[in-house]
Image (tube, rainbow, N blue to C red):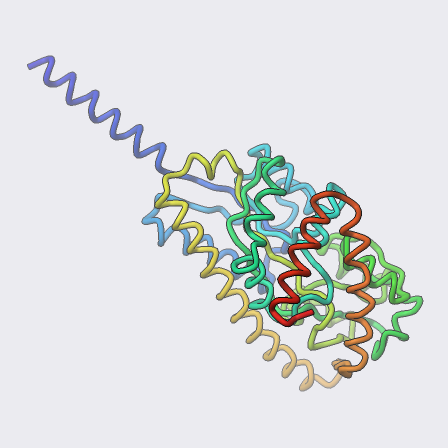
Length: 336
């Protein structure tokens, strides 16, 4: 009887241990600030993961700067300080120019769906995981918001109007494109954009979408936004510590993969709708003037931006791989 009892207890311990190993409490950090439209969608994604996995995966979604700085999450995820991040990949351009090209090839896409197609159908996901592997990070999947607007304190209606404008632009391709257009880019985290505009440190900003800019209060101090966006549609990557991913059972990997596809659809749909709502609100306010560029001026800027791709491709072996893969896909899809 004692032997049977001992065997039963041992079997119970094994089952408990197996269940514990099959349960994951993950801490993800975003590059978005708390209270923004984008961060709300990410919080909903975290809840969705819990529901899809029947509670076997819980995700704590943290806003920018909670554990590490916005441009330090790649190392933090690889080291296991964070379990994952949702971020603009171009923030890591300082490590390899490939992050600029894959994260935000300015002038490449006009919609979130076009960006996702490169990763899902054009080999982008496989290539990005090859690039991320040495960092100990696994790329689950792509998402993207709508093309970014530009909150500005001064009217900007053409490429010519950018000349001499001191503006926030994240490190990488975006910064290079605005510099080539004549602006004076400043590298600031998104969390400092409002204060910098308010104090006159900058006059304009490549920040994020019209809706998210508005939720950050940017239109209270920058009354001349450029919208609809046309210049920048960055990858919003969802990645996890590679060791964690590799240790997960296949069914939970499938859960996370599906959850990111759902998140990508949700993000694009909700931000697009919010953009339209915010535009209507701003027009009704009367103290904000939305500047919509002509197709001719958009084309001028995109041409300037695309001229930055090849120089970035020449900066590293990985960047050249991205340049080759991206341009081949865009040409085959009739987008270049």
